[in-house]
Length: 371
Picture (cartoon, rainbow, N blue to C red):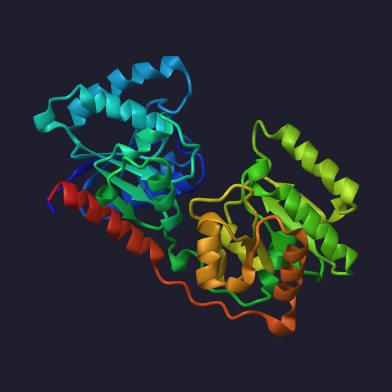
């Protein structure tokens, strides 16, 4: 493949699966000798992006405001300057702005347009822009089915299923239990100290992540005499104070406040997995993929989650014992007890290098359009 210039569009580079995928593809592009440019409002991951050898252009293309539409002209000027071969949009508003910018360029020299459907957004004309790519990458079979169901005009031939990936080297297999990891976590969060099992639910502070379900599970386990503790890294974020207070009140009402720790996102998530005995994935809304499932399994920790969406797909493939019918609290507690039983721990397969596969498949999509 000739040397390409690929511009990726997304709202910002703070944290999350979309942001991580953006950096991973930028890394693969640079490693293959291509030019990787990312356009976003910026964020804490910009230094990491630039350290990979990629470039960042700061443009607030994710703010939901009529004023943001002016950035279509800014993008058109940027595209004229950079002469990209591929414009790859990863979110709806950036996709609309990118698509509009491209329409103002001569058809003969217009960059090829790629989109990735990262989530199961509510069907609408606004969301439909994610199906306008000349290639539409779906992060799971669940997403592909969702696209075809809600946007039947989409040509199935343009869809490419490329599951998100992880690098097993970043999530190495650790002994279970891992006393060193548990001690390190307990030093930072003394409420997590103890010999009882540690439950981990990583995720941002939104009801969709199922934090209330995890608190109820903790209540049930402790009521059965299990000295369990629960850590929720990622809940404490700017603007989420009211939600954090709601969770604290729920924990107090359930009598488990002393066994619950709510923190900001951790930069040592692999260590967090290693310190835990059971990782929870309880999203109330079906996830498009569920990267935390693969990360935790790679470390060697069982995952317990609602069996819907991409999370259900992964659990049914890799750890069926962890897949529970959505919102069945009794079944969830029963499965948790079984997975925490030291004498009956399930065998957890070694994860393949799915990150390398995802990167190669994405570059192959670019090669389809720019041979």
